[in-house]
Each structure stands twice: as structure tokens, then as C-alpha cells.
Image (cartoon, rainbow, N blue to C red; front, side, top):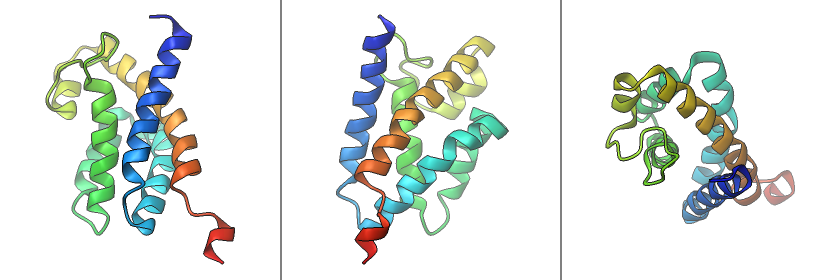
Amino acid sequence: MSEPRFEMERANHSLQCVLKHTKLMKTKQNNYASYTEKFALEILMNGLGQALARIVSSSKNKDAEVYKYLYEDIEDWLTGDRPTAPYRGANDLLMALTEGTREQYRLATAEALAWLAWHKQLTSTYLKEREEDRG
């Protein structure tokens, strides 16, 4: 698949995830957008596996639902039924990360960051509360 086409596939997947979350309460939408905004940096600082493990462990706090959605969205992108998905067909992303090859892990990290670049912009556009909205 050509890079521009693949880039549009990333954008479309991210947009579909974001639109699904527009049905959440406003505070949850805002929290989802905030967590998305910070997640790429967390991947860069700690690695994809550690960052995802933190999301799973955070699913026990007050924003459990929001963390769960972010994990599921990333998991769907990295394990989806696409020839370019690093862990295509895997049922559990964290398990796939630990059982896969180093090359798969590098590809998954690059894909997660590329997908998050779109996701960060789209969540900011569709979900993030603006100063003027707060009144």
C-alpha cells in the first residue's frame, strides 16, 4: 500500500474512533482528549509496552472507562485486519507485544505514534473542551 493511502487509512481509523466517543459525557470526552494528548510522549519516554501497561493499570481509577477506550482504540489499530497491522489478528495487544519479534515491536511503536499524531489532532478538534465553551 502506498504511504499516502496508508496515511489516510490511519486518519480514517482515528476519526471513526473519535466520532464513536462523541457520545460520551463532555467531561469524559475532555479527559479522553487529554490522555490522548499525553500518550505519545509517554510512549517515547517509557516504550510502547510500558505505556500500554500503565493504561491497563489505570483502568482501575475514576477514569477507568476513558483509559479503556484509549487502549481499545490503539489495540484495534495495531491488531486490526489490515495487512500492515504489526500484530494482525492478535486478541490481546500486550500479550502480542511480549510474544512478538523485535521488528514487530519497532513497527508497532512507529505505527502507534503515527496513528496518535492523527488522533491527537482529531480528539482536540472533536472532543476537547475549549476555553470559550466553558463560558
